[in-house]
Amino acid sequence: MDEVIMRCSIKSRLSPLILPDSNSEKGLYLENAIENHNSHPDNAFLKSDYPLSPINPAAWKGASSRARFGLDIGGTLCKVVFFEPLDDLDSRAPGIESSSPCFSSDKNGLGVEMIDQENSLSMSNSLTECCCSLKLHSFSPRMKESNEEAFCTASPIEYRKRFLMKQACTNSVDESESVLNINFIKEPASRNDGYFHGTTELSIDPAKCSNNVRKLWASSHDPVILSGRGTLYFKCFETWRIDEFLFLTKEHALVTTRRALGATGGGARKFSSKFLEIAGLELNRFDELKSLVRGIGFLMKYAQHESFEYPQGSFQGGLIQRPFKSLEDSSNDSDETLSEEENPDSANQFRDLDAISENQTGLKECDKTKIGGAFFCHDLNRNGPSHDAQTLYPYLIVNIGSGVSILLVESPEQFKRVGGTSLGGSTFLGLTSALTGCTSFKEAVDLAATGDSTEIDMLVGDIYGGDYSEMGLAATTVASSFGKLVQPSRRETAMQSPQHLAKATLLMITNNIGSLAKLHAQATGVEHVLFTGSFMHGNKYFVHFIETWICRDITEILFSSSCASASNKAFGCCHGILVQRTDKGHILAA
Ligand SMILES: Nc1ncnc2c1ncn2[C@@H]1O[C@H](COP(=O)(O)OP(=O)(O)OP(=O)(O)O)[C@@H](O)[C@H]1O
Ligand SMILES: CC(C)(CO)[C@@H](O)C(=O)NCCC(=O)O
Image (cartoon, rainbow, N blue to C red; front, side, top):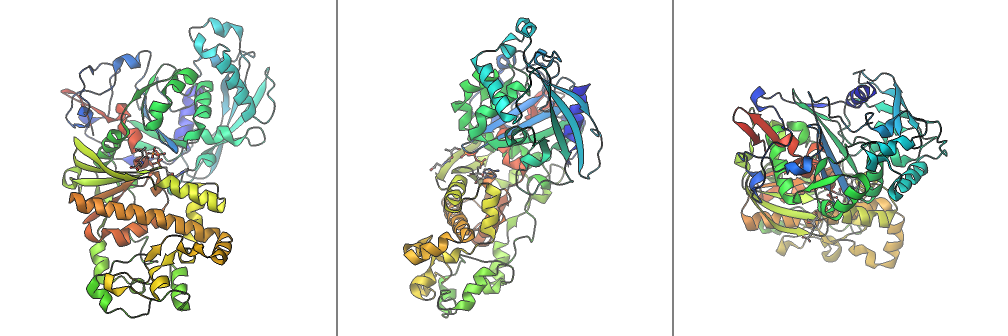
């Protein structure tokens, strides 16, 4: 009963996105460990008509439900997708596994038990607190005799786990009877503003617990309801917290022990023994870039606009740091666009992003029309896509994670990695943190939003005193990122202006990625480029810069930046979601 309430609570405190109902014969479904995967060719799971799921049935031994997890354990972030089928009573969103003997109400057990809850079924969108209580117990000797012995025996790992849990709770735990209050906070309708909002959705009484616990299992984004089929949940946490994640996952029995999880990303390889050792979880590993292509294919086919969001008109105007200018155009240029030192008005333009008009940016109306081809995927659904996956091929994926991978996708079955760069999302976050002392990605992006990079970057105008017309370089073009800081006095001033440093860092990374994307598009002859990866989260400046200067030679640009699409690698390895049931058997949806 508690368990059911817990599940309702998780669902009701968030405002779900709804995907369109499908034909009933295409309902997403996974039969439990029935398929034969032995001769699964390497790339076969990318084939849309491939009849088998690439899950190794042996790995699912002991799995008792059709619930499916997909993990993308990246260099910086770990993304978790959990699919909870509607009709599967045996699966649950991450929560308390009350059936485990570890969660017996035995006063001697170090288990967790939900004992009370209010408002769990309320569907109102107002901020509502749903209170639950958890009891902490020390272990009961009888548990060691249970069939989940490995789960409960106080091994060295267990001791460490207990230690961690105690550390997490600032109050020292009275093992005979300690009550830890957990407040589930129902958020207003939309949380999809591009950032992970871990702490606000699951909050543990701050008086009693550290942030560690509450951050870790807080839902990162709104769940997605697959109508008539089930619900997708999203989690995200920093990869460096993987030990903590595993200890807590085990501690709270968030995932049935011995259930194999679909996993991808470098961490799926690096941490596989750790998953087994700490949490008893086996990983079914899948290549990350294959999973990426597969996940994107799935979302292209099934997700509506919320999954591919780029609000039209949001990024109009603003500073163009690197306008494209043809050589013919530049011959008419005057010295209007001098460096800000020589032309204070120009400096003001840079500072007032909102006030600046398109013409002032040096971008002509006709250019705007031409480059305004940024593709809004609002119509992407399988009932009437304006651009379905078929018309997209061939296209480039520019995946901006810790580093950047650029893939040429020629068909649902075929792709290759054509390039990449080590200057990626974590370069931005790492450098900005080091330079400014900011402590989160959101802070870094927000800081950058208010900054003026021309205080930091050396522009063409700083070198030429105006445009370098002969070569089509506008005075406003960044000639050298951070170049102004060669002057000691500039450096001192810059260190007092973290926002300028953040902006220059963002621009440097963006320019570089944009250049590479454009060059690869030209080299491969593709007209469509899709940018994805968590770096896109809430990062409208990135979108803006890319839209305004990279699109010129590319017919369409797609920005895949919402919760679901950031988790596309996790999707790609979460086979329970991607398998369809048809009259003829099971086929992959992606
Ligand atoms: N809440 C966040 N915390 C940390 N970084 C964030 C956050 N939100 C967005 N980011 C950005 O996303 C980047 C990580 O992106 P992503 O999760 O796609 O990569 P990854 O899977 O960790 O890395 P890789 O694929 O290279 O192994 C970070 O470097 C940062 O720029
Ligand atoms: C190593 C990966 C693939 C891990 O996701 C990614 O971080 C990346 O593509 N980095 C850039 C590597 C390069 O310089 O091509």
